[in-house]
Image 1 (tube, rainbow, N blue to C red):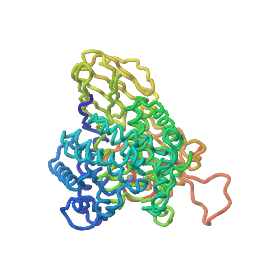
Image 2 (image 1 turned 45 degrees about the vertical axis):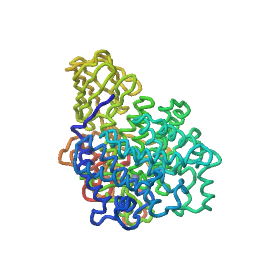
Image 3 (image 1 turned 135 degrees about the horizontal axis):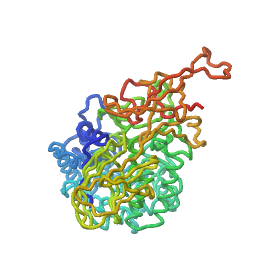
Image 4 (image 1 turned 90 degrees about the horizontal axis):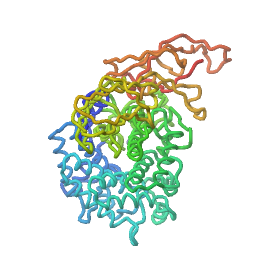
Length: 637
Ligand SMILES: [Zn+2]
């Protein structure tokens, strides 16, 4: 059992600190309508009204309650990072409100309590009742795990009991599932913490029922005479309900929903020992990672469905790449690791974390990206109607505020992603300066990890305690690392990397010191030729970090820049740049704009001048003077 992990230095620790100290208080203010100039959230007030503590009308969207749940989940994880009495008071106040707002039969959802009281459970396809319940349950589990306080979990247990009187396989119940997945994962968490069979049963039912014929969503829509909450009828694939989940082979539809479903499927596959579900998860993983994922680990090629289109369609300027979708991919990858410890899952998890999740929040922690394009021309975002879904700068808050609280709950729970314990040993997955207390079958050990990850990859592990007998620890060697050295107590040890991990099996004792020195080099990456958007271009990566060019360093019109693969690139840690990052410097060229008409004869040789090119981590872009940004650069030969 992993008793505790505390990040205590480095980039992930800094991001976590920003989340705990800045994002959470800011979000609490936003949920309470106390941020000047921001659209009122109404979230806390809705619960007050439902609890009979305030007067007024429901404000916000049909899933507004989920913002409170995400805040509470983040606050629960934050308690593990740093105790804060006033934050704890906020949570206990909210739990009291939930208790009062909950109906006698266990129902809890302010939209249907206040706004459409007669219409509960009439629109599972579009109205997020099960989604809200999922986030509420996940938060309740996190709060119980961290504090041992059961009161929130008790509220949610009554709520789940109620849901199971309405939805399920028995006659007279709705044979359905939610349009926005998340309850599947939450039931898995609740099952693992409480051991209560009902959570496992509901998780299994929701996954197995999805997409069966006759299709529940179609039937439900017909029973409403085609009436839609959003005045739009999405295809079944948008909800991953076009086929039973075991028959789905492509990552389809809304990207956040898809990955929440896949994460829930991976949980269910592991908990139930279900091989056919494991196979489906692996097939969907391959579709995602091999054909539909941006180089940053972002997901979603179109804003129209906020999701996937078809293989290799990965436009850069029009990328949707919702921050939440990258968070969902981190969840999916973590659950695939639990299912089967392959290094690839860790590689994708860290790619998505560093280059698709972290870009979502500003250095200061007070501004957010919802959409994360890989190429930005600010004027186009302002003046081209097709691009108005792209914000060229991070925003203080959103009317549909899914991403900021989702970011907070992931950043506050990063400690859960460093290590993974399985029957065959302990796996070090994400690297970062930290201390971990781990219970092994024969004794407790403490692991102190030091190192400069992700800027360098020489990680030092110092041990205290005694495992009393040999115990395996597996250390992930990312696929980007071609050369590594392992040193145990001063002696170089030859360790073979197997499926992304090197393994040390020994009796660990106080004073043991293991150094994993992974060589980190700048890499030029190209895309498959089928990715039209990246033809003739390269992306520059170093370790798990994807880089980009910004106007602030390179002037306007980044598309005139060209860079040669293999050109010498200097990597330098700049402590005053963007909160402290490794920046890359290379020599490249800039094409001269010699044409004074819109079109003209092309010269045989392009006129260009030498120019230094500076690249910064993509996650840190947009923290200086607003301007252009490009991840993919034109390649020269
Ligand atoms: Zn979002």
